[in-house]
Image (cartoon, helix red, strand yellow):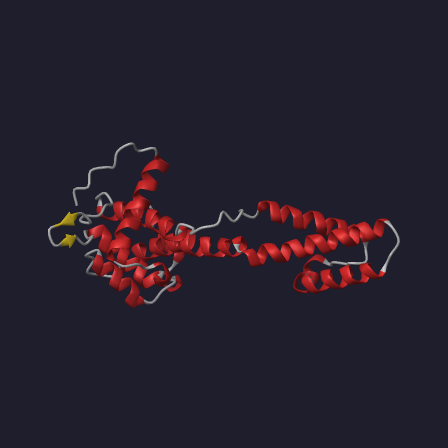
Length: 228
């Protein structure tokens, strides 16, 4: 079976060698492992990078811009059905300003009623496809999916189930989270996605939530044995 690194290539790694060595050391790997690094890169691309890119479409700024395009195109389409007026000039100018960056790609002509109608309808389709803002604090989806992807990689590499130890109350206060998988995830997140890194307790709980989500996704009713 071909290794992933044979397709990705050692020169295609996303991060610095020191970052990978830090992660490999956390997992107890004494030598650099190209296939291991390629799979970590794949997890990052499929989760953190993808969700970050998609998240840009969820922001209100994008929605408001698309709404402005839809409304202006709609006004212009309505005006084309009747007499051309001064308001039409304003709508044409607004559309031209909003679509300046993509004018060449779409050959947009704001004076043509067909393009006005098509733009209005296309903008509405984009708005309908954007997730609605539910308000409140959104869960860290990127971290959750990164952990889930890494958990599968961890289990394939070590032959052990992903899980964390600790986190239970003790006489001296809350016990810190730990264990091989915790150290692996903590190293990956701190080095590769530091904007998602958290303290021990928050990271431990995030890992537990991610693993719980993975179990539900796979239809597991009970967590697998965690003989680490």
